[in-house]
Image 1 (cartoon, rainbow, N blue to C red):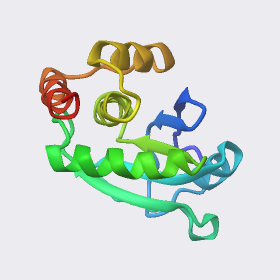
Image 2 (cartoon, one colour):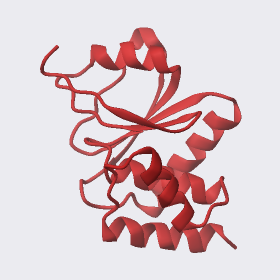
Image 3 (spheres, rainbow, N blue to C red):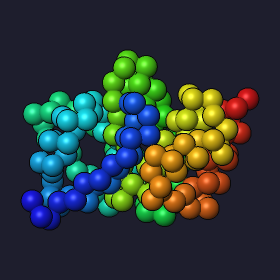
Length: 154
């Protein structure tokens, strides 16, 4: 499976941020890794590819396509964080990814930490950087998070 690459970082006990560099419609590595990590829900922010988890895993799947280098829309942030909240409050594990796991997926996880973790933006980004040092939030993504923080901090 040399054409498949898969890397991830544990942000909390129930949240992983990672990549999706697999080729093809279904990646068997995802199945093996998801099973080992106990992943129950996959949130895909990659607009480039809508790659489903293997059916035998029975992993719930949420696709919120976002173009690389841009931020998820306000609606996507609301939806993605709501899905994450439902998963986490039930004691389940979520895997959030884009293509490389560097910008869009860290943006979504930061939004979750702001909305449901009640963290200020700086703390949310610091937690993500600590768990996934290769993450780099673009200015447009940071601006979207600032707006999201204003919305949910009132």
